Amino acid sequence: MKRRSVRRPTLGVDYGERRVGVAFSLGHVPRPVAVLPHGTISSLVARVLELARREGAEQIVVGWPLNADGSEGPQAQKSRAFAEALAAATDLPVYLWDERYTSQEALEQMIEAGTRQKARRQRLDAVAAALILQDFFAQEGTGARRVWPPRRDTERNSR
Image 1: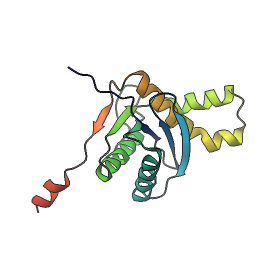
Image 2: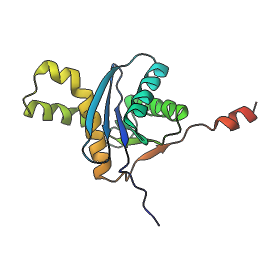
Image 3: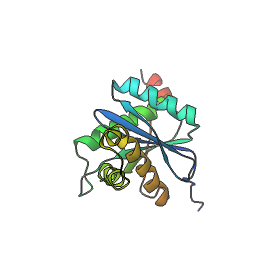
Image 4: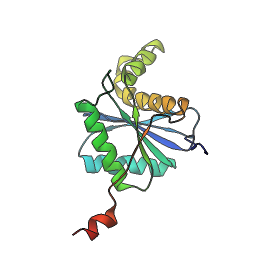
């Protein structure tokens, strides 16, 4: 069986209630791209998809902050709902990726690098998104959950 290649141009998303971090990778070293203010889900989906288009992404990976025991808590449910909204608005594959502790790891890396506090606040979510992609590629996507959008033609036919 042929293994799917995850090392395609990929947009990574660290979804948060106030800010959303975005990173991009061509399958090598992810780079932070932007931190977006949250806004409405529809406006956020549009902004993320515009970044995906601009960067040439072929897939999107959304961080999924599962609980320590692997269960889905409130923030993981919100991240999944956002990933589902993204998947419903694009033909690009959208994946959920277990991203436990990436924001803490991003903060520790930024402190270790001597990043000033103001810069840490401004870039933390984008750096966390880059770490999500780094982990996704290191694990070759093993364990990623593909988000399937509802079939629009089925919805129309069922009315």
